[in-house]
Image 1 (tube, rainbow, N blue to C red):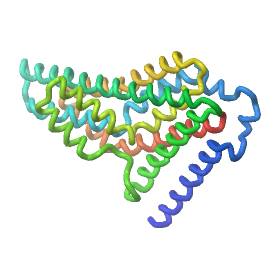
Image 2: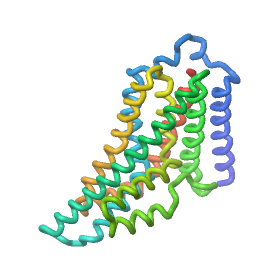
Image 3: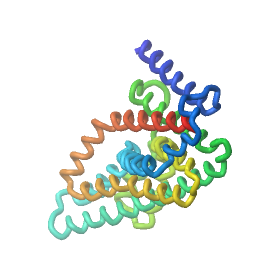
Amino acid sequence: MGGRRVLVAVSLSLVLMVAIGLAAEVWDTPARFYSGVSVPLASGSVALPTVLIAGLADGINPCAFTLLLLFAAAIASMWGDADGAAGMALRTRMILYGGAFILAIFITYLVLGTGLLWASTALSQNHLGPRLGALASIFLGLWMIKDYLVPDWGPRLSAPAMIGTFVRGWGRRATLASMFGLGVLVGLCTVPCSGAIYLAVVSMLALRQNFAESYLYLILYNVMFVVPLIGLLLAASARPVLNRLGRWNLHHRNYVRLGLGSGVVTLGLAILATV
């Protein structure tokens, strides 16, 4: 295990050193020898599929996905084996309250993304904003990879444990207003573990010359982000499906973390190599 830790530490450190060197322009890359090379990366033909795929992928990140499962399980535990009108009423309550929860996460992420996009665009001279955002996303992506390869080494990139307790407790006695507030809280607290891919996409969008167009892409990203959560909520209204989703998440969340982390690092390096 000690040898594996050393190998992982050296490998991730080398990638981070490459990213820092690209951000600081310590060395050039072949892409930088061609004028306007950053345009294709920010063009609609690249930005649109990237935003669609990244948004959907981020929607199944372990943080938001797990917390929504906890919320659905909390409400599901209230009806037990209820059927007929009582069961339908409780399923409706799950969808209604879950919808408020997801809406709050959507708004929170959009507000945070708007601030990041504005700041990155404001620091557009020499592409400073996109470089800083890409570098930060690479760091978080490497952290996610570390959590998969050596999960017992150092702190894990995750939401505070108390958030899960809040979700379970409030799910049993919540009102629409409190569920919206909980969604805002969850949206803020899951940023560290699910914000890596968001930072990379915002950095890419900041390369575009038109802020209004970049903002439309940002809205599209957030719509795609909540699509898996909405699908999960609708599917979880049936107790057997909820149990299967819970088992799937338990056995695959680390693979999802590895995939997201690897994708973030790749996108971040692509941004740094072309700006």
